[in-house]
Image 1 (cartoon, rainbow, N blue to C red):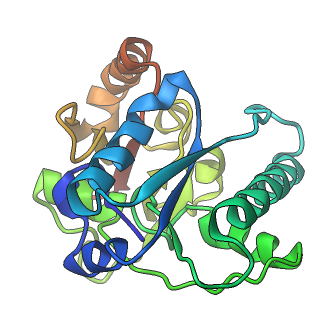
Image 2 (cartoon, rainbow, N blue to C red; image 1 turned 180 degrees about the vertical axis):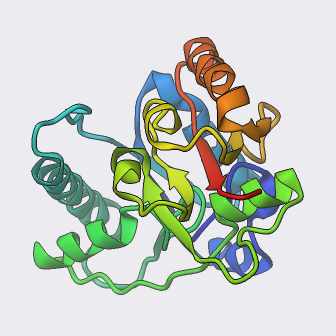
Length: 243
């Protein structure tokens, strides 16, 4: 089930109802650096389903700057699936009478690997049947925070990553997720508008907008400062031309 971009109020009534009907919530624990992400999930469980146990499964490490990105991620997903398969058997049993859940940051359909990893768990021979409950995406949280529409009239919007922003066709508006650096400095037109947000939906929410040529460097420095201060950062931005 999706839990939104950071605000506890992003979780839907449908998800709250389903959460109360499970036995275990599973979470991949990314360690001390991102402990507050696990704490946010625990807070949701404590509020809406205090009878449910939260089981943290250590997330296996991976190379963040690989030569072959696809191969490294596929191997990482496989190792995650093997750990989760063991956790499912240990905490849910094999009889199919107990239910587990994942609280997915954002929405399970958008740049999240949980559904793909569950398929890998099935491929390992564990009989998993799943139901997906949608939620607020980081994209809708970004546009709402800036009070703007996602698309311009008659124009498409590309959803991509910082790694692949350079492949965008000229003049195409884009939402950029999972940018480990500041790809807009290299791949955005200085005349484009950037609508940027970090820690959306949380008390740490930080917003900036303007022409890339005017605010691009400022946002890049701000992002470095926020990452250094908190040990991690989740940010997303919209680039649009002719705005």
